Structure formats: structure tokens, C-alpha cells
Length: 123
Length: 387
Image (cartoon, rainbow over all chains, first blue to last red; front, side):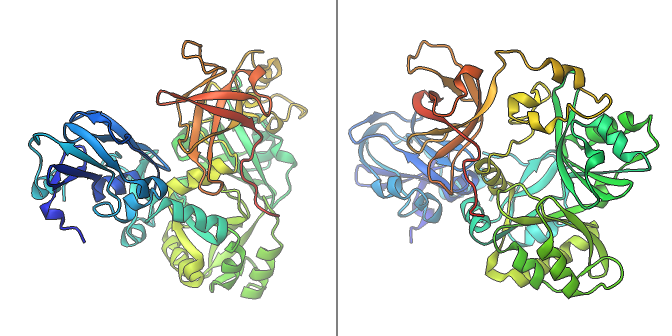
């Protein structure tokens, strides 16, 4: 079970967990619930250079399409094949097996703490 | 992201029941209605495989009553409503003078001189006003009873069995007991209704729906709705899943049923939407929209088609349709509804396209957020249950 209080968050409803110089990125339970059942995930290819705040992927539910924003500058080093094959992982385990991409990051921009993020979404 | 509705939103008589069930709500035509309870996919599959329970209390119910009620509806609506028998129902359209669709309706004949007109929530006032105005020359009266009528739908292959097993039902009138009800509901044909009782209170049981499955729609007093909802859930157990509007939309889409505001608008002529058969041009006398319908849509007016696309990215409302992959080409149509079909596993969509491209098998492209996705024109419905 992921300790969600140890993660960092963005206003675009992503979470980030640092593993050395690699940022693991997913979307929050709040975002997953708002989307509804996720049926398709489009992720950037390994090697893609991404810059913070740009759209790099799509998370599509039966009812709507959510955009995945890169939370940091860097290079995609892994895309979660399990989530591509089984998109419902985004709903069932958004902070764990439902992670989306790993980005080798340079300097991290300022992000939200768990408490700040919860305040943002009104919880 | 969804936004919360206005604080003045109307609430269903089942609102507290839904909240207790953990429903997520959406603003729909001024109502706060359940969009889903847990998973819209699970709710969708429940209707296809077992049974789903829907709160449709936002729908409008308008009663037309009087010796000339049938004649009034013949003049007011596109179909020949006077010809349906007591207990029958008919899908119909309210047209403008220009022949555009102001609403699509189900009309139940509930008595010799009495009809129940069920309108979309967003159009309820318009339909009531138009019916009042159009019925004025006739010996009939129009009552908007929407606030006094709740609507619960039980849809899916297990719906009949659950309805029969649920205690508290009877048929209206003498001989009111459960066995009579069980027989009446089993014999009830599609697009038929009969007056019944639940806990000795009146309700109308109709074999109608908007999911492509067998099922029932139950019209009753708002005060009775929570008891009926709980009784159906308790009897149904794991066979009955409460379903929100999200699953209702994917279910109707798979079944090829148009949605007002998406496929049907005031600028859509019935023939464009494939609903030419709903207009009874052979009926005697004039009806609103007749002249425009007889003129017909312009030869190049777009027509509604079904599309399937490759991959898993669904075309969605507003996405443009192209004849060729060439990025510089002009669009030949636009999507009005689309989803990755939960039952079929591939994307399905409804779109209006130029009539010369409407033939089954025509290859087209849909622009899905910058990518031209190959699409094929297919016949409706996308999904048909095994009879």
C-alpha cells in the first residue's frame, strides 16, 4: 500500500514519487473517480523528451477524455505496459499498479504536498 | 472534470436513497441525478447480463385526457396516436412548423380517453406548453403531472423474474393479488402497459426502455418510489445493480437509440435521423410540421449513420468526419455520440454525414484529437440482444 502522504502532487491531479533521479507519475484517486471507468490509456514512448506542463498522454474513460501532463522536465524511461493492457488499474489502484510513466527528471519544480492537494480538491 | 450543479437543482424523490448508496451525481437538465454508483462499466454489464435499476424521475409526464384526446395528439404529434389501443404505447415526435424535432416521446394510451406523454426532462415545459396550445381546439385537457410522477426502470434479462418475485405488487381493480400480477407482467408485450398496484398504491407497469434489453418502466407517486426501489433491490439481490446515467448513455448508444440534444435537435428533420417511419403522413388531417415533412429535407442534408472505428480511441460528440485521410480535406460530417462499446469491445459512434456517404460499408475517417482514425458505416443497432 502506497503511503499517499509521502507523494507530491500537481494541480492537474497527478502524483509523483521520486525513486533516485526518476519520477514515477500517476493520476490521483480523485482524478480517476472523476473520469469514471478508464478504458484506454495512451502513454508517451520510452525515450520521449517531455517538458513540465505539456500534454504527453491521454486517459480515456467511457464518458470523457483526461489529459496526462508531464509534471517535470525529463525523458520517459518507462511506460506502464500493465496499464496499457489493463486500463482499469487506473481506477482500482491509482497510486500503485496504476502508475503511468517513469521520467528521468532534472530539477523538480515546486509541487503540492498531500495536505495541499487534498485542500485543492476540497477533501 | 464534472462540475457541481446549481444549488437550485431539482432532486429526485430517491435522492437520499442514492446518497446512501454512494452515488456520484451530475447535473442533468436542472436535476441532480446519479451518474454512477460505483463503476459505469459494471452497471452497463449488469443490464446486459442480469438487471439494472434506474431512477428516471427527472423525465416529464404529461397527461392528455378528454373525448378528443386522440384527435388532439394526432394534430399535435407526428404519429397516429388515436389508432393505438388502450394499453399500447408508441414512440413519437413533437415537431415544429419547420418539421424539426422539438422532442422525442413515448406515448402510452392508459384509457379510452387518456394518454400519458413521456418527455425528456430538458423539454418538459416546452412539450407541455406545445401540447396545451395544440390541443386547445379539441375537447381535451392537458396536465403536466411531472412533479407528481416518479419513474423507476428495471432493465435486463432478469428484470421479469425480479419483478415477479418482489412482494407487494397487484393488478389494479378486483382480483388484486400477486398471482394475477405475476401472470399479467409475464404476458405483457413490448410497448404495452397495464395499471397495477404496489403496496396498494397505483402504478403503471410498462414494458418499455432505453437500453436494448427486455425490461420495465414503472410510473408511480414520488412518495412510493423509495419503497419500490428498496423492494426491487432487496428481492433482486446480486441480480439487480443500481445504474446511473453514464451507463444509460452507453446502453442506448449500443442499441442505436438516438438521444435528444445529441442526435435529435430542433434543426433535425425526422428523415435525417432515420425516423421517417415515425411520421404518419397517411393520417387524415393536418399536424404540426406536415408541410415541411412533405417537402422533405434538402437533397444534401446530412443523415445519421452508425460508425465503428479501429483501435480503442472512441470518436466523441463534435469530432469531425472525413472522406479521405488527407489533412487538408473538408469534413463531410460530425460525430454526435460515441464510446468504446463496453459490450462489443470496439468504438461505436453516431454521426451525421453527407447522404452519398451513408451507405453501409462506406469507409470514412474520424479525426480523434488530431489523428485520422479509419471508420466504417454500419447498420443500427450496434448491439442486438438474443431474442
